[in-house]
Figure 1 (cartoon, rainbow over the protein chains, first blue to last red):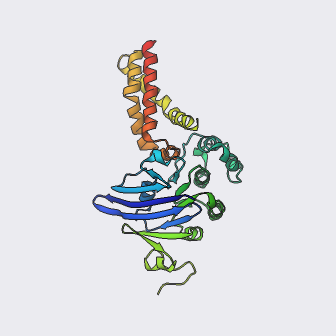
Figure 2: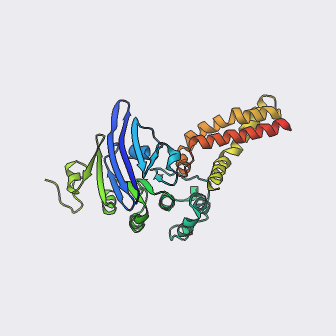
Figure 3: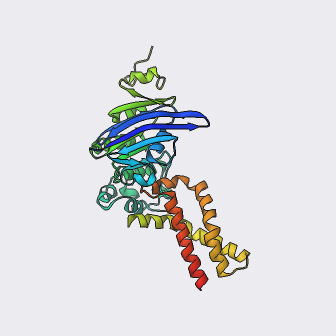
Length: 226
Length: 91
């Protein structure tokens, strides 16, 4: 079992501390939910872990391998950004063949959501179709850990449920860190939850804590906070 | 092999535009093959770089997820440009 160890992450923008000495970890087979208000620094944290944003300080390690830059993340960490990232003029089939290792291609090529759009170019897909292709590519990559930044963005409720269950059934081989404003889906999916506010991370043990922290106005059971 | 194919995918996207820019600049400054070759290595990659940064910045994540950094992508552009210059100069 591998462990993604994130430590001492500090980032400031225009003298404002966005992330202050963040510590976080994730194991293979674990889904960690990262929640927080808009602009709290969730995406920045994921990008720093991935290596595409430079922080003031960070220490990221998988097993004994220290991750310092993008080149170190190969086969170890993959990141799904908020916005579409696949090249536009390429067909879905070509993207699957180019992006995935041989042994993982068939399962995606034969996926019920992918099969009907295999020969379409990425630019001709709807927003939801693009998102499904991206998520499946990231999930089936060789990486041991995947960072999903708002994966449910643009997906229909049925597709959200499908992707949620898809991750659940395949989580044994990878570790996942997921952030999304669809907190109900994140809560249902995550084994543990952390909340980012004012640059600090707080472990959430009870969903009602999110009400106290001002992230949601009522619990998902429907009980209003008094 | 998959990495090389993906670098070629990146190059395919920018190659023809780089050539078009180079030929236009080459014609503007005298039309010689050497001028076209030099603009292919000196001017076109920078134009492409700024165009890509402005229009397709998010697509870097596709390459990052494969472990291909920005330096490798634009370094390969420079190498291809250099090969083109050598071919055009030797003609």
